[in-house]
Image (tube, rainbow, N blue to C red; front, side):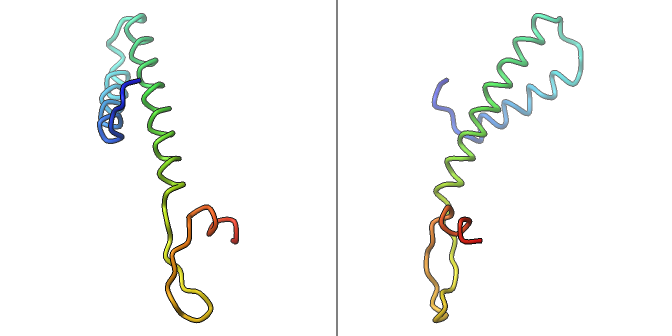
Amino acid sequence: MKKEKFEQALERLEVLVETLETGNLPLEETLKVFEEGMKLASFCETKLNETQKKVEMLIKNQSGQTEVVDFDLATESE
């Protein structure tokens, strides 16, 4: 798949969902639109997962100082 930006992929996915919801497409075209939608959904999910791993959370340590903690480390300690 081309390197699309998340926002572009999400917008395209929304258009495809609206198109499928109308129910006005022939079966073969419906299948093509559905396949494209599944690829875009997978792309968006991958991007969200990658982003989640990069997220850092600010938390206060025991001394009251603010420190940066990787998202994965913060969720493991909960």
